Image (tube, rainbow, N blue to C red; front, side):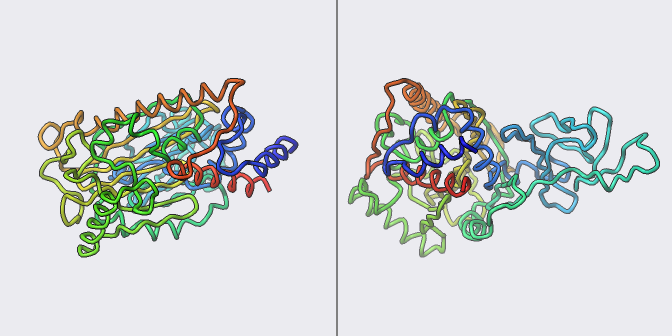
Length: 403
């Protein structure tokens, strides 16, 4: 209680437009508080519906100390449970993904239906009622083909977000994709530094040569750094999408955003040459190959890029005060053939290089913050307004949850 009060005081005295004090990037007790107040009480992106296409398909993921099990149930929907047997607590599914007609505990073979109901438990006595021991459920929702969970018994509203993003993402046909490549890395930095780095392109000109082959530094015509030429390019793209009835207008809410923005002139995909990574395929019902990139983020743990030939997701999961797992997935049409329609190296090269570059930035940032010489510094009002917005979201969220 005393610790929460001191954190609350520090948050309330946070200087606007400045980075956070050192302890917010290093303190173990504060990290545990964040895991409880932010990651356990908000909707988290876990995976995608295309990863569990058939009944019995499942994925597992760890959120802090909690192991979660996501499964395609017999009704064709998505169910989510704590990956913990109701007998003596053993982890049920030990693989990252798989498929099974039933959920069977490897310890004593307690067996559950895909809806979590216990159907077999041997030698438990005559007065034992299997109905009293279903798997503990986790709140789960699907929006735009992405699976979200919330560990809280009282999850925040999800409807506004889901209803808003659906018409933007629906033309990309997420149900009909497959994961063509997946890379996870552990960055030696606080999870907030991963987000701060993501929310600005102040570092892009010197730091991301591959990314800037296709991606403009600015994604807003009203951004102070947007040149007249870039603004004209954006407005031309908006006009074309308006005529094709393709949603594009930016929606910015507290904690989430969606907007379709054009790529650089002459490019249609985030590849080294700016050309499609997947040949002879176009996602869903998109009108043509030149639809820019649909950018979607949902704090505290996911951002995504949807293009005409493939989609990319980035999932952020904290491990410790100075360790963060970033998982990147590249999704392509499910009937696309590797080696014929796409080359994995070409598909992933831009963001593999960019992720490695960002990891270096985050880790150097963390090392500098750890020193006695660190003091919170000011954000650029024109180039780092996205970072400021993230810190404002974080500060407001923590204050509300502590109070």
